[in-house]
Length: 392
Ligand code: MLT
Image 1 (tube, rainbow, N blue to C red):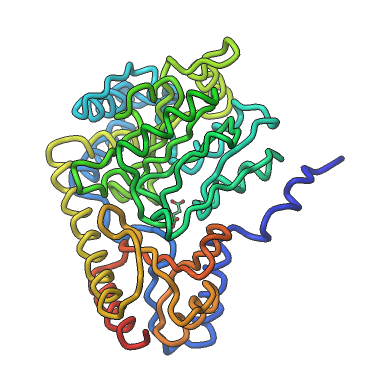
Image 2: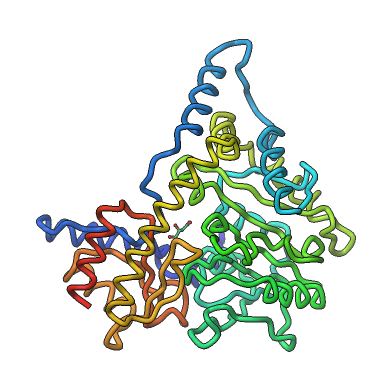
């Protein structure tokens, strides 16, 4: 038996597992220190009333012979796909229901989609980046070219026509930097992808945090994107589904390579390897799009925006350079006093009891930077802002 040798090339553990282990050790050694967690982007507000009610109703249906459901369609129930399609429709983007695939979250699909592509493909990944894009390609042994995202380009790198790519990862609003591409910038990406006969894997998991109406929330706002892009989205951050698990992936029928439709391939892949998201969860997800669901999730997003503003004020007061926090739940700050990302992680944990995420965990260009999330509890976030001001 031979193992997949590429696993030897991975970091020993996934970034957020490493952080969790370090924090667990710290709290064991310092039980007196109250720790505020602004590390992993995990929500703290509960599911909203509309979602809970819809799920309770679905649970009741599952308990009655007449309304019980067994296996559902692997690609999701029509009631949820219709709600998603209507949501895009409001932005002037039309999809047929078979172009929408309901999943258990963006992370799984971002990894699983690679089943459709040859391991010979050249992958272009911005650095710093959500580690899943890198790790899933390392596991498959695909050659990766990194694209430098730096303070100089506002952490929004643009394509270089001289660089060859087959698969391109973009995330906007960006995790970890919180930076958001404009329409004009995404147009450059679509043009580049089409010229290269490449596919863009566009992660829109944070689209609901965009407040500036001039910024694109979907790659499909760009003309021509349906011929070169797949979009991943999630209810995790929009509606507090990090523990409930539901997301969706849009694979336009126009996507055709070497005579094969990616939409048909993805359907084939999902029907073979996935049995769909639970009916109860899909009912909850559909309620996110109801008028009450929308108002309630908007309130929760505003709450996180307020947290971001509190953290941003603290950084401004201390003259710390940062991006994000405006149209994103993440703030990406430069570590003070020339500290490395992990040095600052240890410093902040020891001196202020605050957990953040070291920028270097997202790639080489993240070294010397640090990510804070606005997903914390409001009282704790205010406390964290005060502590930041004290120790910075
Ligand atoms: C993060 O903190 O980067 C995210 O929570 C990770 C994720 O969404 O999987």
